[in-house]
Image (cartoon, rainbow, N blue to C red; front, side, top):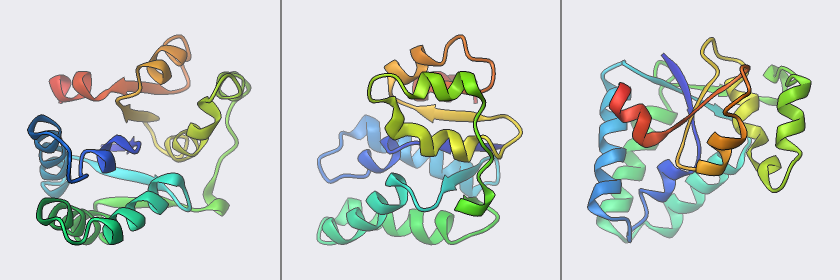
Length: 153
């Protein structure tokens, strides 16, 4: 199953993240490593830029360094676990989704929808309640809170 994750995944890898958030990262990484999930990542995007910035910024923190290295080596650099969506692969979004993304600060999440639009399920896993609410009535994409996704999967 292909899904798109937003930057919560990277935020939960930060040195100051709490145990609950760290456990969520490990749980997701285990699902990916077992082949239960494949993540789809827009490239370039805020996600990829943040990932590489964090790898450098948190190199001296044991937990963050270890989990980021694991994520990059075991997921991002493994085509069976991660699929990149490059500029040439982007499929234009439908009008309704574009309209929602043009409201407020949701435009910064366009890269998530560009990636999800190349998948069968068109599912984005997020911790952003406003994003979930904004797309609640949109039938083109499934935007799921991380807590709900973990309960279902």
